[in-house]
Length: 312
View 1 (cartoon, rainbow, N blue to C red):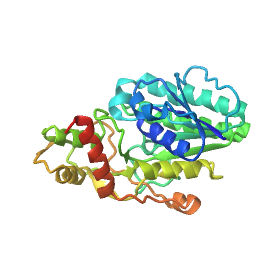
View 2 (view 1 turned 90 degrees about the horizontal axis):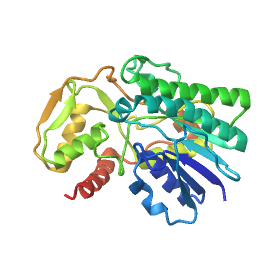
View 3 (view 1 turned 60 degrees about the horizontal axis):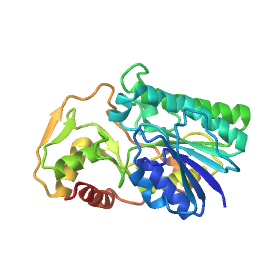
View 4 (view 1 turned 120 degrees about the horizontal axis):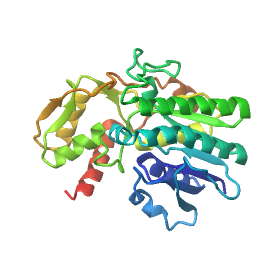
């Protein structure tokens, strides 16, 4: 049985990755320091003989006894509300944490996949964003703590690949949604859904003309799984290329929830990207991957999850 370590295991994406690897017959070690993760996300896995959990901060030395075949590094605050509150922890997990896990991969001769982000493109001057675009990032702006942590993460990962010949994979994740998102994580979908369900006006930052593309979590996990098992070492975009404005997205949530909320507009945060859409040509050609779940279906499933969480 192949053994995989998944950091950030109690988070939104990490917990879904644990589910997928358990389903595929792996022995899964989940690791999380729980600064943004939630044990409820993996409670259903705790009784399983093929899952174990380590409450540990990966910026400290990471020890895993015995053999280890794969590492997926998903530990990091990932929403603006989190990394703006925890800027130093965000920088440390992208630097020290990644360094520790690359060292573990080297020692164990394990393949490691690191979770990068579309945020490395900053507020892009190229649209849609392909992997060859170097980005437009304000390294000393408020979002720089996350953007630069991930850019450094990519750089040190490629250094270990080139110098130590570690088998590395880098996924650049675009906006993703689905069950287990935190209601208070500050991102558009949970904010809009929780506001609608609680009868509050829906808050849109700026004039709502900025675009995003939303990928359902099961599709994203499938892309990550395929990338890990591929032979491709350079960064790869995984996301949904169907683009929508934030204003249109808010209107979709109002229609879905059957509520009658108003949209209220607030100033756009500094360095907030005006456009965000992945070029997934590489994922299609190399992995044979593209999203399957359309937004209407994904939002319906996610809405049911949020209704249950709020007891509606």
